[in-house]
Image 1 (cartoon, rainbow, N blue to C red):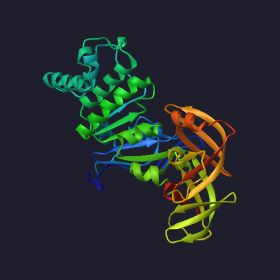
Image 2 (image 1 turned 180 degrees about the horizontal axis):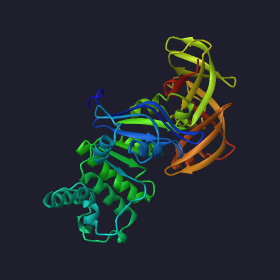
Image 3 (image 1 turned 120 degrees about the horizontal axis):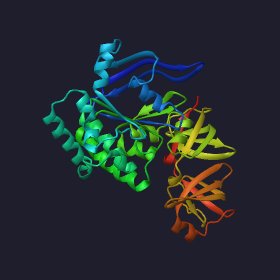
Image 4 (image 1 turned 120 degrees about the vertical axis):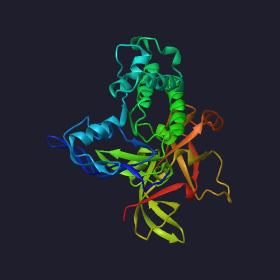
Length: 364
């Protein structure tokens, strides 16, 4: 993918309602052929951004540029909207057959009957819903209805596809099946896609690039690896799963490693910092090891602390363990490991993590 080939750009985009600023984006772009995930908590501005980019939400200030052309006239906006498709969290279907729903966008565009038949048939097969073509849309399950919405969007062969939390209202098995199929279809079609989600696992699985939103702003945009491993600030770090977030000061520096003081405890990390710098140190729970035995010399973990278990919580296949090591620390263990180690609330354990497992954010 050519990263210098934006199909969509916005400049100085601002959406206000009364005195409230819903969106404030100095610059934002979507590259041709990429899958871009907008992630952030509820109310971050993800849906507002998609609706603004679709010209469903007006008025706004700023420029929207599509394929090199500024959208500043009724005609240019009309032509732009014909080239995009949007799928919402709740399917919006007409009270007619599945076939007619998938064909609706093509009919509006005046597509010939033979081409409509061929395109609809292709999308029904692609999304595994050919057997539903004569069914009434009123009789569909939520997962089937969302497949119809997606098939209708793909049928018009848009240059831009916007997906607004398309999996949020589905039960887990239905959601997993649809994500698996959509992942394959998006890669196969190479369709430029922007989708909003509050689920970082969806973003990691589907996207080429991630933009983290909060308070109507984009805090960080980059590859999944960049955003997950090099968060721009503590909010991004927290949202992408770096559950241990510690504030400290650099007190010693030796080559590429340094020591930061956290509540009187010394933590070793790797990073380009200066003595006296204030830093935020983040550790993923899966990088923390727990043991009931004394620390052995020669192991690669440079950070070893005694910790007391404050709380435990089940998290699917894992047990989430909250510890007090003189600073708060979160770890994941399997249910088998919990039983094997005899972990209970109040128990003291040995905790360890590598210096390279610490994500470092400089605060100056």
